[in-house]
Structure formats: C-alpha cells, structure tokens
Length: 212
Image 1: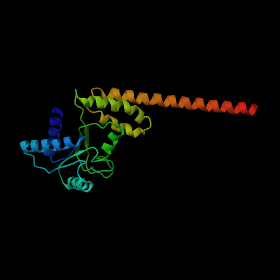
Image 2: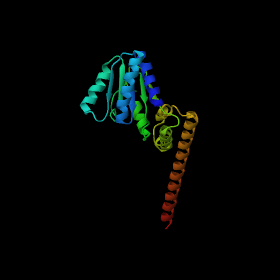
Image 3: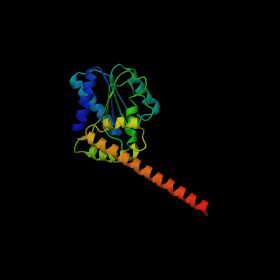
Image 4: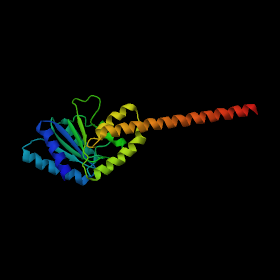
C-alpha cells in the first residue's frame, strides 16, 4: 500500500543517516509484513543495519530480548505492535518513531509517546502518527478526535501538548485543537454552573429547615 511505502521509505531515510527507528502497527500480520518490506527496501538502497521485530505471539521474555538488543545497538530498526510494546516499555533510545495505526483509545496516544520520551533520554525523538488520506485511518482519527473532548476535560493542561503530534496528517490541525480547547472550557463552565446551583439549592433548603 502507499502508506506502507511511505513508512518504509521514511524508516530507511532514518537508518541511512545512522539513526534508530521504531515502527508500530496494530496487527501482528502487519508487523511481519512491514518488517519484510523494510528489509527488502534496505537491501535495494544498500542500507546495512540490524532489524528486529516482535508481536504478541512471541513470549514476553523473547520480546524483552528483542527490545534490549535494539536498545543496545548504535543504530537499527524495531518493528512491533502497539500492544506488544505496551505500557512501561522503554524505547527512549530512538530517533524516529512511526505509528502506522492510530489506537481507538485516545489516552493510548500519550502512552505511545511516553515509550519514547522519558527522563534520562539521550537524544531528541520525532514521533509520527501516519494517517493515510481516503482510508479507514481518517475514520479512526475522527472517532479519536470526538473522544478527545471528554478525555481532555479531565486531563492536565500539559497533556494537550501531545495532541498536536497525534493529529499529524490532518488538514487543519490548529483549528481542530482550538475547537477542542473551546469545548473543554465550555464543559468546565457548565460544571461550575451546575455546582453553584447545587450549592445554592442546598443552602436554601438549610435556611428553610432552620426557619421551621
């Protein structure tokens, strides 16, 4: 597919410069196919670098070994699934992270980013979410955006910084973010008004009981 070609070419560009790249997808079959496509393209371009892959069919201790091998290498590629490289997995020694499938749960966008951006990080990292125009990616992105309004309403302010990255590939990300923030403010105002009304009603009821 054209998205796979883009992802493979972008990964090869990073590897050609001596960098380290992680490719994440949502399905196990895509993980193996993406790794095979990457290795093939590396051979065509004459790029020599170690490559690793891992998904949920591989035992946990073997996945840990794959991750440790990738982390220890000065350059190379790791292809995995979102779940196999889950919460708590440290992949901070990475130059370029390419997420080829958006998770349906918007909070997992931040979890994905946190695998690469941690305290003690030794290098800057580019985290890229690829959304292919005219595909199911746009439908998933739309669902995630609608869910974000609820999630962001209870998220800390600094979490908003990650939303812009997760929207890469959308036509009008600034406008979407502005609308999202405005909806959050409106929700906060509604909650404050409801709390004030409830407090006033309770005080009125208390005064009535005192009079009787």
